[in-house]
Image 1 (spheres, helix red, strand yellow):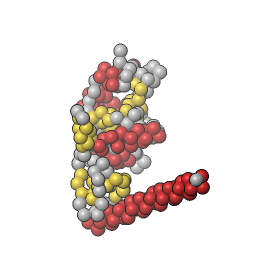
Image 2 (tube, rainbow, N blue to C red):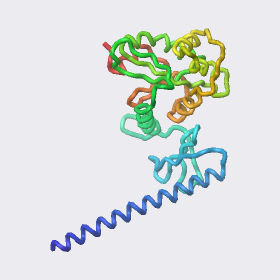
Image 3 (cartoon, rainbow, N blue to C red):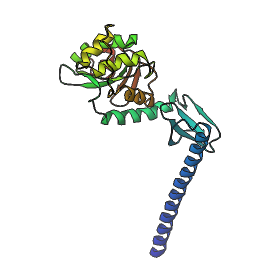
Image 4 (cartoon, helix red, strand yellow):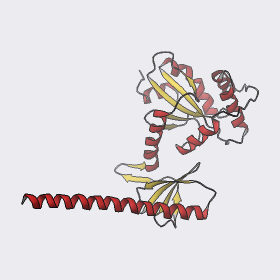
Length: 249
């Protein structure tokens, strides 16, 4: 009886291993099918296969520098845009759930060396990462809240996101701040409408920030990303941000 039990266990292990291998092989076939079909249609775009989506028989594919596509397993059909999961009492944005994880992982390891950082004036209690544009009115309003945020213990880390794109006047202005010997002062002056003379250095990280923002779901500015990956689109007053961060009085 014991030997039969041992034999049955071995058979189950082998069966599960084979099933896992078959599933992996199937995913590889689907991946190759989808990417080849997309490339045949638009070879000028780069695609990253993510994996199965919440919709049966549809897979997520990231267009690099563009949207996430939901593609049928035969690669014949796709759609993009928001995908919502129907749950009791709410509609849940599936993409945002995944992007929360992506954003959390990115900002857990992203160096601040290429950010413009306004450190808190007391021991740091919280950090916000802000995709910003110098020509954005609400970005300017948020920047006026930075001194108060710093006094509350909030460190503000800026990344560049010129809404008009990397071939624009906004890009030149914000790149000038990043290229300045005094990036904090230059960014502040620009947000106050007093732009420094243009000085776009070749090693500035603005295009890299812009592409990162697009990958992480940024569509407008200011876009505030918390360290847990949550993104808060739009302007928030210092008091409101403090409450969200759990440091409000």
